Image (tube, rainbow, N blue to C red):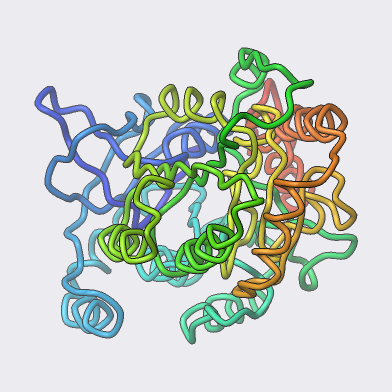
Amino acid sequence: MKVCAISFKECWRDTSGTWLTDGGFPRQMAGIASLFDEMDLVVVEVPARAGGSPLPSAARVFPIRKPHGVDGRRKLSIAMRLPYYAGVLIRRILDADVVHVPLPGDIPLLGMIFALLCRRRLIARYGGSWRITSETTLMNRVTRGCMRTFAGGRNVMLATGSGPVDPAPQVAWIFSTALTREEVMAVRTDLSRGLSSPPRFIFAGRLSEEKGLLHLIAAMKILKADPSIPLPHITLAGDGPQRLALEDAAGEAGLTDSFTFAGQLNRTRLSEEMSKADVAIQPSLTEGFSKAWLDAMAHGLPVIASNVGAADTVIGANNERGWLVEPGNVPMLTATMRTVLTSEIDWTRLRRAARRHAESLTLESWQSEIARVCSKQWNIPVCEGRLAG
């Protein structure tokens, strides 16, 4: 069977013609590709950038033009170019047996709609927070409504997260990771260590408003005012539209020396930075199932995270693998950081628990779970790791 994956992920070509992008997208697409005989991959082409990881070598890449602007202007751009986008997407969909769309996003939403109209088997995977948050948009609501409406039969609907009950009828939870079993086992870290001097925290992800990093700077400013607290050094691994604003905010708070803006890191460099850290911190205002949680846990890092998405089951509601705070609650974030920095903590227990959890949720497990759901719903076998339909 052939799968066509449709994404709004921005990708670029290097001087050799190899397609690259950032984050865990290439590995997850390789995981989806492994379930099928062939893959076509529709992505948004942008000018070449530094760094990046290659897209799956076996996939045939079909680039589309990047919509203009952001938010409303971007949607208007897509509407004005709808014949172009429809033509590219429908051609690829008609040439495939299965369509995979990582949601939310405008281009994959179009892909889902066209796949439904063309009556192709569909794997729609919602990666944002399924729960309503302050960051939930009208487009998010429309996307989830479509998934609920058309779930079942040839349409496999997956929501990134976890919980004791399904997120909606015929919609299944799926976790998210870009960590292979081999990569997890290759991480060698001291699980009995305490805190460094000064303590070292790390954030990994896009530097954008929904990640709550201005709240982190506000909490750090409060902690700095108390000389009895060992002020941590925080590495921000990632890049994004809020970087300059964050640098300015850190400077205005007198915290320039307390933050390192490491920029976008490849997997090797990210692992190196996490190996130096003591604790991961993810103060996001919204998440589904952050891959950064598991990246950190693989390195034995307990996580301070906002209680969004699947955080309560991944990190644990009772400090099993870290600490939960209410999103956007600066006093609570500050108090939690103070506790972590000053209290007697069984770091060995926390680090071992975090590591065990990461070992149980690898990319191979993710692939197998998606294959299991598709096999059951489509009533087709899985042969040697591939869907045989």
